[in-house]
Every structure is written in structure tokens, then in C-alpha cells.
Image (tube, rainbow over all chains, first blue to last red):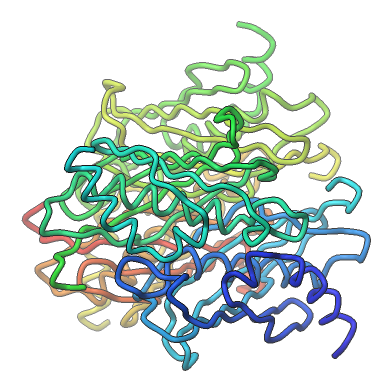
Amino acid sequence: MDDLYKRIEASFNRQGLMKTLNASLDKVEKGLVQISSKFKETLSQQHNYFHAGVMTSIADSACGYAALTLVPVDKEVLTVEFKINFMKPANATRLIAVGKVIQSGKTLIICEANVYDNEGEKLLAKMTATIMTVDISRQ
Amino acid sequence: MDDLYKRIEASFNRQGLMKTLNASLDKVEKGLVQISSKFKETLSQQHNYFHAGVMTSIADSACGYAALTLVPVDKEVLTVEFKINFMKPANATRLIAVGKVIQSGKTLIICEANVYDNEGEKLLAKMTATIMTVDISRQ
Amino acid sequence: MDDLYKRIEASFNRQGLMKTLNASLDKVEKGLVQISSKFKETLSQQHNYFHAGVMTSIADSACGYAALTLVPVDKEVLTVEFKINFMKPANATRLIAVGKVIQSGKTLIICEANVYDNEGEKLLAKMTATIMTVDISRQ
Amino acid sequence: MDDLYKRIEASFNRQGLMKTLNASLDKVEKGLVQISSKFKETLSQQHNYFHAGVMTSIADSACGYAALTLVPVDKEVLTVEFKINFMKPANATRLIAVGKVIQSGKTLIICEANVYDNEGEKLLAKMTATIMTVDISRQ
């Protein structure tokens, strides 16, 4: 397990919501992070599929952490905004969110996330996110 | 408790995620729904504030249900997409999401949600959502 | 004509596109700018209504200038991103875009714009925009 | 010139704004359309680069026409909403917008557009758009 993974994992493990969403940090590379979530009933919408909020939450974290892999260790990141399109109902036993940096500036980092079903084949949702770097002391 | 509230509540109670997010259905009117969430550690991001995913999930449900109040009982709604801007860190003991319909068409309904802190004064986040009506049988 | 109007007007007049879009700078207040466009055939889509791009362009400029009214004179603004929902076809002789600041931070300013028809009654489109302040020397 | 190109071109030529924006229809394939615009001063923002509204307008048309290539000839398309991130200033002599369908449903079609500079190498902006199919008679 390399230093980059450890840095992201340290923050991931402090996110109570990620545990609540049954989420795991699958992959960490420069500019790319994959997070997945296993279905349980506590994550459902009214038809017992994954709630859109779960897709969104792991996609948001995947984007934020993909951005964080490119940021100096004395900095953090905040999500400014995102937009997500839902393409198919999340009728799956597992969601896989892959966040990637598509543009990296000094202040702002633009990321995309794709959310796939358990087989990693069907694209269920797509997010574009604007992330801001901030000094850790500002938090 | 009127029929409109009961219709929305029946669906709300089937959303496992709403219980997981400590959420309650506070208000239901024609074209407006309010959902709030009480903080607990299982809903946190890395600084122990509410995770953006919680703000987003209750805002999404508030928009969807605001749309549903305007739809015939043999129809349902699906979230097509939304965009959300985060304005302040969600350092609050309670989040209040108010979803409102701003345009209602036969196929598509456009909603906005404001997410406030516990005192209902600070605007923490703002969402615009596109919702589609679908026949229940299509689900 | 006050100093604030003059500052915005000076930049507005340098935007070749605003002239091309038959646009005028109607109102400038702290945190609010109104821009309108009179229809001509060169601004049309395939049904001879205003092209969505015209609504978007004047809404974008209205948001950017609303932000600029709050920024020190040694700074400028850049549009980071926006999202716009189109609610009704722009079958009008005049479009009126009203841009307003809804959150103002040191680095980022969040704005909204409503686009109305000639009578200022029908809401045709709604934009949310993220604007960044930059030092003029960076341009 | 094939039938698909001719269908799109017929609509493109009726869009007065496309001529105003010095735009040309470069490529039409099933699910993909490319539109470019040559710079002139009438398309500028205050620093004499392309106005963001030009990038947005040709990206919007590229998305709409990419969707139209997949729609029966008795139907049309309307843009419901889009979001666009601007990544670099459009300091270029030509803009190239490539719109692609990423999800095609019966009622809604989701598209993306990338906007490049004259050399087709720098990604200047990225759009995600939601398009709706409508019967021609509804227009």
C-alpha cells in the first residue's frame, strides 16, 4: 500500500458516511480514485434499489479524493458544486464510482465520475464536479 | 394529516436511506416538501460536519417529492439530473432541505431545493433538479 | 449614471458578442445586473425563436457582471461553470436576463439568473453560475 | 453528402444564430456532430477572446444535433438543460465543438460536448446536456 493510498485512506476512514454507505476505497492513483458500495436495505429508495443519494455520495467522494491526489500535503479540497445525470435505475448489488481529474489548476480542479453497476459495464450515472483547494488551516 | 402528506409519507417510509440519514418528512404542500436530518457521526465527512452527500440526498428527495405532489396517483417520478452548489460547510446539528417546483410540464418537472442549517437562516447549499414523470407500471 | 454602472458598462461595451446579440445593459446595482436582447433573425434557432445560446449568453454576462459589482477594482471575474434549465420556448420579441449574487466569498461568487420574456412575466430559463475572482494582471 | 448530414444541415441552416456565430457543420455521424466557429471581433468578450456564450451555443447545437441523428424523422429535439465547465480561456482563432450521445432513451437523450481550440488539442470547455424528443406537431 503506497503513500498516496494511505493519505487518501486516512481521510476516507474519517468520513462516517462512507462506512454508513457500506463503501470501500478500491483504487487510488494520481488523478483517479475508485470507491464502491455494497447494497443493503438501509441504502434503498422506495423500490429497493440504491437511492440516487448513494450514487451521488460515493461519486462526490471519488471526485474529491481524485482531486486530493494532485494537491500538496498542506492543502485540502472542498467540493464547490457538481451536476449528476442518472441514466439507469441503480438496480445492482454493488455500485462502482470512478472519479477522474480532467483539469487541474492552482485553485480549482475539475473532475468527472462515472458510476457503474456491479459488473462495471452499465453506466448508471455521470457526474461533473468543481473542487477547490484550500489551506488546511482554513478548515 | 391530509391525503397528500400520506401519499408522500408512504413512499418516504419505503426509502431505507432516509431512515439511515436520520431524516424526517416535515412538511408536504402542493409543490413543496421539507425534509430535515439530525446530525450523528455516521453522517459525517472527515471534519465531522455533515457530508455533502447527506445534504444532496435529502435535497434530492425533497425535490422528487415536491414534484410528486403535482403528479396523478397512477404516476411516479424519477430524478433525471440535478446540480448542487455548496455555499458553506455544513457545520450544523440539523439540516433542513426545502424542495419546490418551479416549472411543471406534462413530462418534466423542474424543482429547486435550498438546504439550510438548524436555525433555518444560513443557506448551505442550493440544488436545481429535473424530474420526469413515469407510469407506475414502467417501474 | 453612477460609477458602478460605468465600470460595468466599460466592460460590457468591449464584449463584441453583446452588440452582436442586440443586447443592452439595463440595470446595475450591487449584486444585480439586468441585460436584455431584442429579437432579430440573426439570433434564431430553427423555428425562428431566440436560440438557447442567446438566452445563455446574456444570462452568463448578467451573472458575471452581477459578481463584478462586488469585486475590488483591481480584480476581474471569470465564469468557472454554469447550469441552465430551459422552461419554455423563447418565443418572444425581447429577452430579459436578471443576474443576482446569491453567495459571495473571497475567491468564488455564486450567482443565479432568471431569463424572462418581453413582458417580464414568463420565466423562460434559469441559470446557476460559479464565478471566480482573479487579479487583473493574470489576464 | 449522405441523408443524415442533409437532415441535420437543413435544420442547421435555419438557425440564424449559427451563421451569426460564423459556425460550420463539420461532421455528422450517428450520435456525433461537430460544429466549429471562426473567430471575429463580433464574437468576443472583453479581452477579445471568444465569449463563453459562443462556446456554449455551438456546444449546445452540437449536442442537440447529435441527439437528432438518433431520433425518427417525425420527431424533433429540445434542450431541457445543460451544464458547462470552462477550463481555459478561449484564446483561439477557431473553436471546435464535438457533441456525442452518451445515453439514448425513448424520451430523453443525454449528450456531452467537448470544446477544443483551433488545433483540436486543448480542451477549453465541457458540457453535459439533457435533450428531450418531441413530436414535430408539438412545436
